[in-house]
Length: 237
Image (tube, rainbow, N blue to C red; front, top):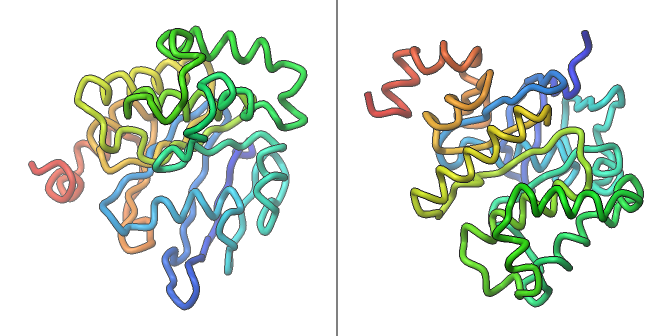
């Protein structure tokens, strides 16, 4: 069966700096994978290249049966691939609900905007309570909820989350991982990019470990959690 997302030999970077050096991975429909590694490993560049925000220099990205290598980001989004960026990138001066509704601006999502909004408020009741509040006045955890909710408003087939636990308090980190697990149970295809290796692998079916722009190991999450190299390098064991 053809994977929903296929990345083959992906090379990209910024200016004269190369970051990815031939990354390959696959995501089956309904699967949840973790892309883990330390700072500077190339995790963010990987999903930015998949989504078209950073041009690929070589390799291929195939999504939902289409070769999307070189596509503009808006065209990638219309096909059903959404990204929750590191740093959230919300519209601070707009309300929670206005931020969410902007997520449904795509043609694929407009007709179902009201239904999507109700689903996001069911997932994050705190956002329903804060719907009239300006996004810039939310706590860090609430802003992360809003960033995820906005991506879900686009009615994606696959969602890529870039460091969703970064800078959050421990209780909010736990809530983020619970939310990702719920989305996975409901059938959402997910790429989770994280420095929090143990938590990520525990909720994902499969993992890819990046170092210096290359996949150094990959496999079922249970196998990676038992791998001595992974345990020593990333789990402190």
